[in-house]
Amino acid sequence: MSPAEQEKFLNNNARFRNLPPEQQARIRQRLQTWNNLSPEQRQTLLQRERVLAEMTPEQRRYVRETLMPQWQSLPPARRQVVLGKLRDLHDLSDSERAAKLNDESFMNGLSPDERQMLRGLSNLRVGPPPG
Image: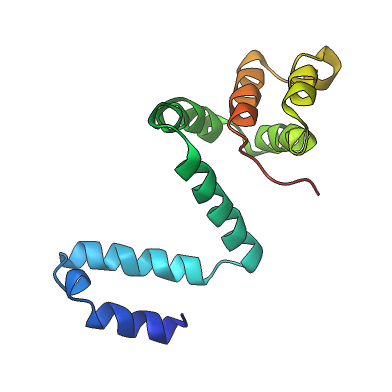
């Protein structure tokens, strides 16, 4: 929907109108953020949502309580290194991916925490597509 159509929908939606003003404002802000994303950014977010929807509750908890805090604590340059490794693993079969993750030359340059994070992200099939 266009932003005007979105606003019309919200204004005509009884559930939305019954929300507290703060919650309505948060929803509008998130919608505005979404509308400002590029098509590629939207596609990436939709893919992440699909991955999360396919996870078990235990996997989601692991991502929320372990992987995300580790990821957020990484400096941007280190995130890029881990993302590059994830790209390299993206289209591999399970056995090829396991071999890469056990290959010291592939893992070279990663700290023990980054190696653990890469394994966790890779096993969940999370990460950017190649290219």
